[in-house]
Amino acid sequence: MKNLLPNLLRFLSGDAQADRVVPPTGFTARLTVFASAAMAFLAVFALALSLATGRLAERWGDALAKSATIRISAPADQMDAQLLAVTEILATTPGVKEARPLGEEEQRALLEPWFGPDLPLDRLPIPRLVEVIEDEDGIDADGLRARLAGEAPGAILDDHARWREPLVKAAKRLRSLGLVSIVLITTLAGVVITLAASAALSANEQVIRVLRLIGARDSYIAHAFVRRYTLRALGGSAVGTILGALALFLLPSAGAEGGFLTGLGLQGCQWLWPLLIPPFAALVAFLATRQAALTTLQEKR
Image (cartoon, rainbow, N blue to C red; front, side):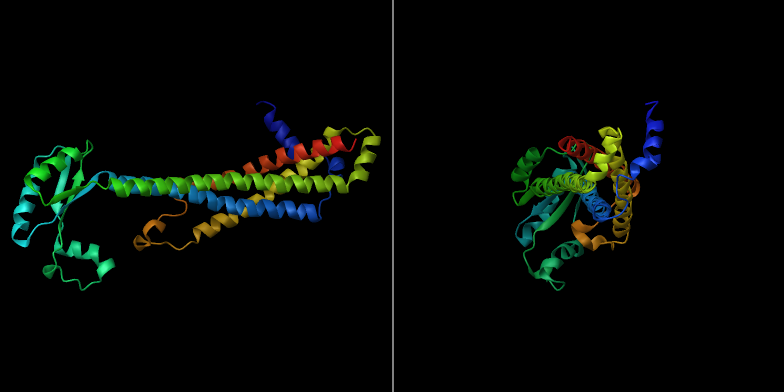
């Protein structure tokens, strides 16, 4: 660790004589910068997708995990009695923090997206809904169902498990997809930089031969290529990261009506994560270029 900072400073300062081996401009230079910028831009969005879907899974899980709904289906003349029975059962059920019947306007709001605003609730046999909020310990769903079946036969408990599990699973798979995308982007960036470095080494074969004649070692020549391509990848990825973060920042907010789109992007301290992309891209370029340079120089002996 003591020699890390001096070696890093020496790497960044470089060697002017060795740097002449690597063309400062040209196709390979532009390709490296463009590829690094493009990969960093895509990595920002893949990172945002992964982080956002992680939040989404937590939000969906938390929103549905501690709530349940009781649906009461009964003839109109028995509805009030069934509702009263359900209320009394919930009042003595361990784990129930709060229970309340939904009002007519609340039920109308739930049905409006499917049936429109003019739904005549008073003339339709619409079930009554009771919202149940659980405490930290939760309720015994099977026990509550048994009590409802015996004391309020028209009441059915829905603990949201069949809705929660597929949603959370889908969000987690999307998060995994984002992580896989980052791995693929990183791999592709390494391949492109490797090809660019190999092409530059092949194009400067005569210069490399002369350097060897005057006593230059392969490690000395490889260092020049590694340094130049690492700095190009660092600069290109920094530009791509800034553009990607700016594009995320300018995304319109979906608002409460956006459904699952609400909250996509980066929030709070998550905006610090893109700062890791340029140094990570530089590390990938360092490893890829070093391997490509040493392999190519070995083949040209």
